[in-house]
Image (tube, rainbow over all chains, first blue to last red; front, side, top):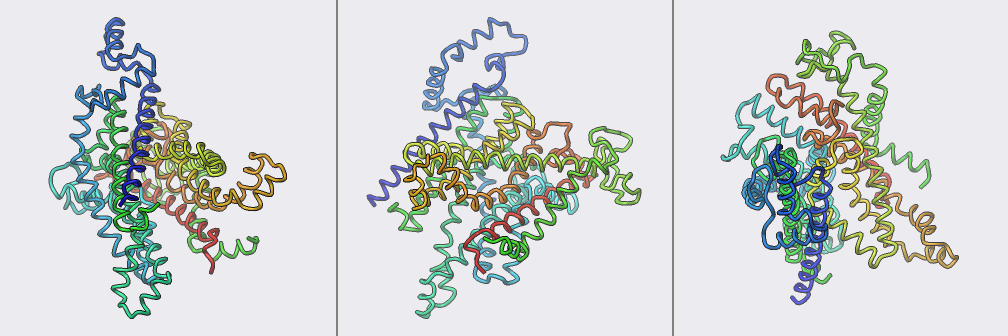
Length: 309
Length: 284
C-alpha cells in the first residue's frame, strides 16, 4: 500500500509537470499565431487607439514572461479566457460540448470491446484457424481505413442506399449508431491484434502448461489464467485511445455533424479563434493525462506486480 | 543476416510479397502518371460535371473513373494526387525518423538529466491529441507542404525516440561499447559508428509501419482543408469535395476512398511483412 501511494505521488508529480509543459506550448503557439489578438477581437473598423486600449486590457503590452504568468494565474483560477468568435467563456463552451463527446467515446469503446474481445481471444487460442484468418483480415482492414472513408461508406450504405439510419445530427440512440461504429471499429482492429498476440504469447508460458498438467479445464485456463495477463497491454492501448477520443474525434464528428469537442475545435480553427484553441489544447491534454493516471490505477489493481516499480 | 536468408524470408512472408507488389504498382503508376494522363488535373470544365465512370468505353481519353463537381477527371486527379501523397509520406516518415532517432539515441546513451528532459518533452507532446495539435499548427502557420511536413514531424518523432532510446539503453554498457571508449573513441563516434547500426533493425520496422499512418494523417488533414493546399489534388480533399454529392454521385467519394484504402493497406501489409522478416524473435 505504501508502495502504491509512493507510485501514485510520483505519477501525479510527473502529470503536473506535463500539464505545466502543455500550458507553455499552448501559450507559445498563441504568440506565434499571426495577427494581433487585440485587433482580432475588435470589429474591422476599430481605430488604433481602440486596439491599443484592448492590448493594455489584455496585458499584451507587458513582457512575454509576465504575460505567461498572468495567463497561468488565470488558468489556475479556472479562467480559460474568452472565445473571440462566440464571445463566451472558453470553459463554458468546452464543458458544454463534453457530454456529446463523452457519449460518443463511451459508445465507441463499447463497440470496440464487443467486437475485439471475442475475435482477439479466439484467434489467439486457435492461431491459424479460419476465425483467426478472418480476424486478421478484419484487423488489417480496420487499421487501413481512414475514418473519413469508413464513415462515408456507412453513410452511403445505411443512409443513402438502405435509408435506415440518420447520418447527421445528435439526440437519439439511432443518431449514435453510425458515428460509434466508425470510431469503434478501427479501435477494435487495434485491440484485436493486441489481444491475439497477447493471448498467443501467454499460452506458450510454462505456468499455463503447469496449469494444464494440474487438470484444470481449458475454459478456466483461458479466462482465469491467460486472459488476465494478455489483457495488460490492451488496457494501456484502450486508455490512450480514450484519452485521444475525449479530445473529440475530430474527423468522425465532422463527418456526422456530431456537436462535440471535435467539431468545436474545427470551428475554432476555421474562425482563427486562438483563445478557444488554446483552451481546447489545455483541456484535452489534461483529460488525456487524467485518463492515463486512471489506467495506471487499473493496472495496479489488475496486476499487483506493477505497484512495486 | 545473409542476403540469401533475407531473400528467402521475403519470399516466404505473404504480407511482404502482397504489400510490396501493390506498393510498387501504386508508386510506378503515380510517378509515371504525367506520361499518360490526358486531362488537366486542375482545370475545371463545368460542361463535364459529375459524369459517371465510363471505364474503358472511350479509352484513355474518356472519363474512366468519372468526373467531379467541377468537371475534372477523377482518374487524373487520383494519380496526380497519389504522387503528392506518396512524396509527403516519404518525407513525413524520414524527417521524424531522423529527429526521433537522434534524440532517442542521445537520451538512451547519456541518460540522467538529458534523458529526463527529452522524455518529458515526449510526454508533453503525447498528451496533446494528435489531430488537435496537427490542425492547430496548420492553422497557425498556414497551409503548405513544408508546414505539413513540420506537422508530421511534430506528431511523429516520439515513437522513434521511444524505440531507439529503449534499444540504446540495452546496449550502452555492452562490452564492445566499453572497448571503444577505452580506445579513446568520442561519444559522437560511438553513437554513429557503434550504436546506430545496432538500432537499425527496430528503426526500419517502425518506419515501414509508420508509412500507412502518415498517409492516413495527411488524408485526414486534407479532408479538413488543413493539408495539401488547393488547387493541388490530394486524396483527402477529393473525398471532402465529393461528400456533398455522395447521394447523387457516389463515385466522387468511393474512388478516392477505395484508392486510399488500398494504398494504406498495401503499406500496412508491407510493414507487417518487414517486421516478420527482420524481427529476431521470428524464427521458423
